[in-house]
Image 1 (spheres, rainbow, N blue to C red):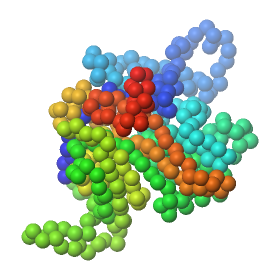
Image 2 (image 1 turned 180 degrees about the vertical axis):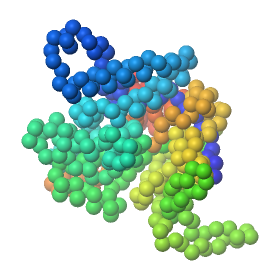
Image 3 (image 1 turned 90 degrees about the vertical axis):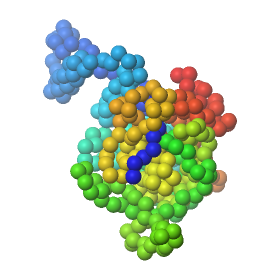
Image 4 (image 1 turned 135 degrees about the vertical axis):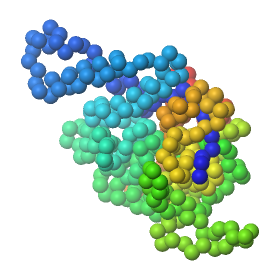
Amino acid sequence: MAAPSGRVPCLWVQVFGQRVESLLTPVSKPFCSAAAASSPLDAQRLAERLRAQKQEQKTKNVPVPTNPVQRRVQELLRFTQQLQRVHPNVLAKALSRGIVHQDKDLVVINKPYGLPVHGGPGVQLCISDVLPILAKILNGHKAEPLHLCHRLDKETTGVMVLAREKDVAHQVQELFRTRQVAKKYWAITVHIPVPSAGVVDIPIIEKEVQGQQQHHKMALSPSYRMDNGKMVKVRSSRNAHMAVTQYQVLSSTLSSALLELQPVTGIKHQLRVHLAFGLDCPILGDHKYSDWNRLVPQKLSDGILKRLGLPQSKARHIPLHLHARQLILPALGSRKEELSLVCKLPHYFVRSLNRLGLEMPSHDQNEAGHLGAQ
């Protein structure tokens, strides 16, 4: 099933309000400088300088696009790749600068784009790797590592809750498991859902996609199908998971929309699948679920591409526009009141809103103006 079209803005990846390039300053001094010659180098420093020199040489050989928009796209790609290669101490410090809330039990961060929560094949650096360092930054060298309470996809930004103690982490995990945590996501979609508000209640199952690019995707597993104009109940698969998503259009144009999503359940890729295959409104930058049969860059309409200032050939660099906007935790331990946690949108998300002509709700206008001016 082919996904509808969309469009993309000038893109910048932000780490908690701080541009990635400020965290990733390359080594610019020549390897054989007088200062280096006067003091012996250990093996690790020598290797680091050689790698930096090699990377700098690679960068010099890459032609710089003359088009300013294409140049920004190239920078976005480079900075996203560099994010996984920074030193863990640098990443931990960046996360500490973006703390949304902390108390004696919890630390809440604004997760940046492109950073995995857990390790895995091909993952060089992830959030779980730097939790011991982050704890020491916040509480001193004797601090115990922080603990993950839930997860977000690599491409999703926004609210992420960490716990100082393992038993507190288990309590928060139980709140998520029993659906006591209210979750609100914001997404920019290609196309506008009809009706403008509603509930998608369609089970989801993981399926293998056959073809030249054999791979697995989450897919809809509806309980009913149409047969000769009649609705017929389908025998449900035991591998299908109940999935319920509440949605509401906050702003829309002729070809795109800003949606607020409230997942009732927490199935893998639930929001992406419900929007792409349930409402025919894939998320901008969702290259996995914009075409069922193939893994290809999202196909966008000429109107959206024009507003974003990008050709279709550069669409593959558009990041997923899905942001964990708010979590509301019920009373926990000594805290007798619910805790509302809100994360600002990343810069690239706000710039996409501006270019597409989408407006944030009135009580969030100040945030949009502040980010847009940076």
